[in-house]
Length: 150
Image (cartoon, rainbow, N blue to C red):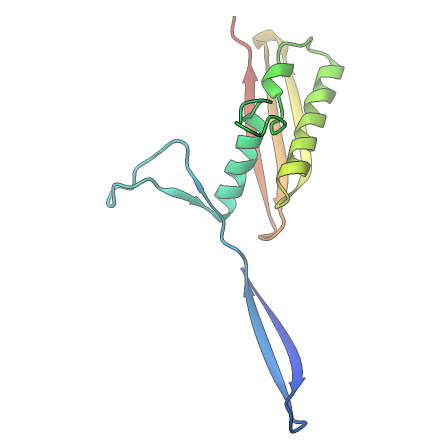
């Protein structure tokens, strides 16, 4: 994504010149945790731009407190709330944890919608977070299935 700015500048003789500056967006890259290999290079395929930001959001949501060394406060602690009673208060806590961790640790995105569906028959929550990547002006969606095993 390139942005162009035009500005008039004058030199020592007083002549004005139109100068344009082209600004390119910072490319984002991330490691794909599925570790798929490139068929030709036999190297791990990195994630780029939208996919990298989407992967970063998903990793933040799936991280619990105290899972990252020297950074105990990072995480949404969604699995910790999975064992609470399946009621409106738990859904509100899930929503607040998701909103808080994304706003605090992912400045590249702004949240558009958080949808939490309670599937108490299967002891699970279906969570869908829709967000806008600010630099690319693209809307992305992350879906997570939180499931309690018995």
